[in-house]
Length: 583
Ligand code: AMP
Image 1 (cartoon, rainbow, N blue to C red):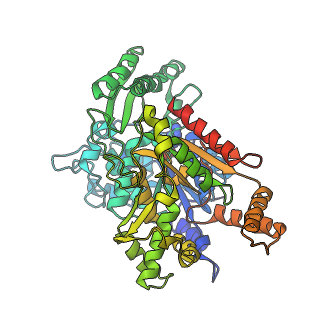
Image 2: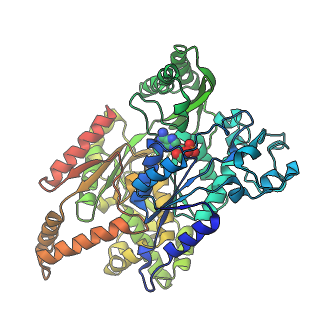
Image 3: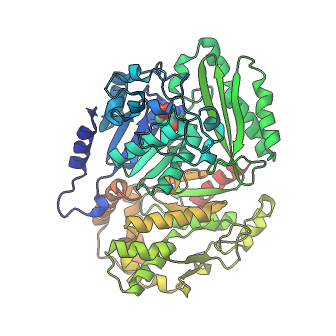
């Protein structure tokens, strides 16, 4: 692992590491995963690093306590700084490069120019009395924080007006500015952030979209102590008594969640439930408890499908935050696994038995392949394909009609729990045979199964722009839940918040045996089982290391090895996982 303190050093390292040997397959391009932190690393940070390690060829972690996001009376000066220990932890976790710049390296002298002092000092000395940010009437941080000589990034006012933004003026402008700078320096394919800072994720998502930054943000679940306290670098400030009181934050959120899952949806009731628990710790000074939409940060009077219940409070001088997402939707079942593990067969069966929609992503990739072939453009003209695909009108429609109020033409009426079994009998919209696929007004249901499409679909699916566009559309289809989907990274990337995640595996030998059997059934057996073993092994390697959609097991996925199981047995296992989740 290498430690860089300068932008020049890190950039040079990244340039050298991204360089591809001539003629290398672009699918195998070097990917960089980035984890921005303020250091004092704990298991929460390490979970982000672990995830980045799984999904990228190179992992960069930044350690930088950003003065721009601290208020005047906040803990900038006392924030724990443990670079040596952090570097060791990063090294052990398989990080390739740590970027730990000084304030001057990252901001130059522009941060202080208005104070008439443009010379470099240590970050701590310089920060004395700084960054007294609060929103002015026009939405810019007030003059004392706004640095005329520093270009800053200002997120939407409405997103900063709630939760931490309402009590930490200027904080999110500081976060947005530093994250934009760091993303520009590292230029990662993926950047990893903790759900613990839910408002930060929402604001950064908006930033990435509004500024067209070429990065995928990956939200990661909150890691907690054994008693539920969300891990935080600030927990070490707590006295023994405060530490025991601190568990009330998560307990109060859980109390509200319990009522939510019993049907309570209203803001007043949910916040009331939290407050009812908090009275048990009089020492707690509450900053806020609020219920907002997790993406837009709009305050909610009632949860329609999803709400973010968030809390911030002080114990002594330590400020703690926590949140939970309350989701009211039919579950999403994500089935990932290596090629040949039986995913799509099982996914179809599961969908049929539960009366859910099987989202046939293969049909989507086939439809755009058909469109590209029809257009006559060269298959490998990626920019032209990207233009075509991002403007196409692609529709999948089940023969049972549309899901109510989903705005989607996909699938059948989502059954309520008590309708479920009868729906399961009646529903055939999950079967491939009944799925109608149209693209730009052409019914391509049959045409996408042609040999020509079959032989070209993998080349089209390997293009980053195609994948980005189709994943976006898949996520739109899945927003209201009630779908089953299979692939390589459904549970980690497409639906990281899927309620039921399964990782289907089978040994290479068993998958080779099944493939051999299938080929034999079709009268096509001019490949030996031993060659199939080798081919499947190589495919696994390629799928796990590819830059686009690498095969990845979600940490919260249940692994099912299908070596000794029939399709019916695997299906039954997944159906029972679903039912257990529902009950
Ligand atoms: P910080 O060092 O506090 O700025 O955090 C760096 C990243 O780690 C942010 O994306 C945080 O959301 C994330 N993070 C902090 N604590 C946790 C936790 N307990 N679980 C998961 N992620 C976390």
